[in-house]
Image (cartoon, rainbow, N blue to C red; front, side, top):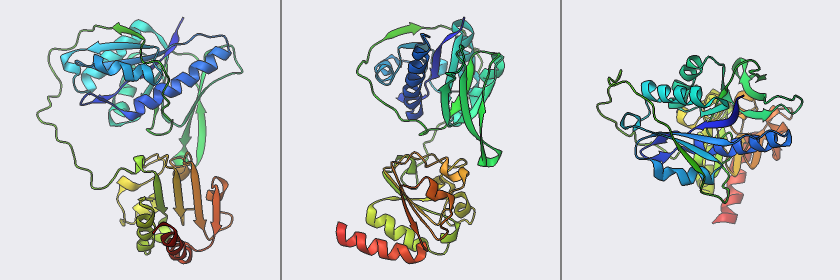
Length: 333
């Protein structure tokens, strides 16, 4: 019988990806839901790499009960060929009940390949994962945006194991626990001697701006603000905030995709999110509805953004923003 929740741990230059820690914490919550049903599931981190045993304490601290350590020189960098092979081998050998993978460039590459090799399904870009408390099985209810973000669909995988899903970064919160020790299981697998793709050189691209995914305050603009970005930047400068954008604004070319918030952009969890002239389509709110405080400015009193906003201001952002910036300058300076 299958059991346990496996989390693929992505690393780069011996640093654990934030999304992997977020998934460990979320897996811990799923473990608690299973316990309510009388089911014992462990949270198991699958850590491929080379000379990376020193990373195991952080995995235990964020939720892992066990770590499956897969060390091989060919796993020093995550690759389609070798990472897929080792994950599929681990799954076949251990038969977990579910596998969670971060929806990063690497995760989106390997997850469908692994699912195909172990003959199971895959739900991509999930935003909600919970245990089905109405049945006597270990079934997971995995929710993701569908039809361009206009609807949310809940997907189940009742007939195959493991239940697999990729989850976008910052959808879940990473939460530390006290323990930083647990069981380490060493897993050995044979890897092809010949590499399908040879990495000749790796260059780290320098970011042109701060990553909005890590911003504490974001001032975000909709398409209607295309000719008034000076007002957005002025408010952002006053608050020492980052500038974000809806897909509609990015499509005008005024701002790059690196600051786009939403289903096809980035998922953010700032302390304060100020939405200026943003209607609140599901495509956008899927990327920012976890913000601690959402302030919405929109001239349409029926705009969907007001349904999730903590503070709503009905009015023209072009008129309101200069006054808001002026008052904040008096307070902060």
